[in-house]
Each structure stands twice: as C-alpha cells, then as structure tokens.
Image 1 (cartoon, rainbow, N blue to C red):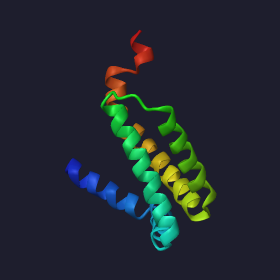
Image 2 (tube, rainbow, N blue to C red):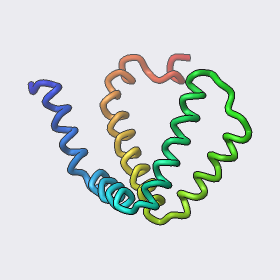
Image 3 (cartoon, one colour):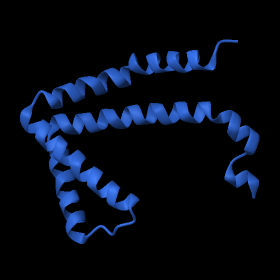
Length: 118
C-alpha cells in the first residue's frame, strides 16, 4: 500500500492542476494586476480579518464596524474582477469541502454522525 503522505501530495498536485484552482489563480492574478482592484481587494481582506480577530477574541463588533464591512462588501461585489475572484474562491471551496467529506468518511462510519448517535 502506498504511503498515505504520498497520496496526500498527489491530491495536492491534483488540486493545483484542477480547473477550479487554475481559474482561481487567473482571477487572482487579474485582480493583483489592476492597482485599483488590488487596493479594493486588500481593503476587503483587511476588514474581514479585523472582524474575525475581534470575534475570536470574544470582542463585540460595533454597528459602525458592521456597516463599514457591508459597504466594503458591496463595493467589491460591484467590481467585475473581484466578483469573479470571489466566485472562483467559492468554486474551489466547494471542491475542497467535497474532498474533506470523502477523506473523513472512515471516521464518520466509525463514530457515526451526531444524528446517528442520539
């Protein structure tokens, strides 16, 4: 039987060569190649990160911060290249979630799902 790590590296290569990843990379390169889009995207990511860090620290997010985040999201969604990048991220996330379900199936079969344990 092949080493499980070899299989994991083969899976990594398969993801890198997948249509989903290649299209994400192209969309990312397009955004990074456009100075305006790049700044908008970085602002979006910074805003996202700030809010996630506050949540993880158990700090309250103010109404002002929520409104700022909403306006940043609306702005980036109106930019065609950033919107395409976000769509491609979502497609790759679906692929990775599907793969995660497949590779965790032995544990699910062993322990069952929370619904099966009740």
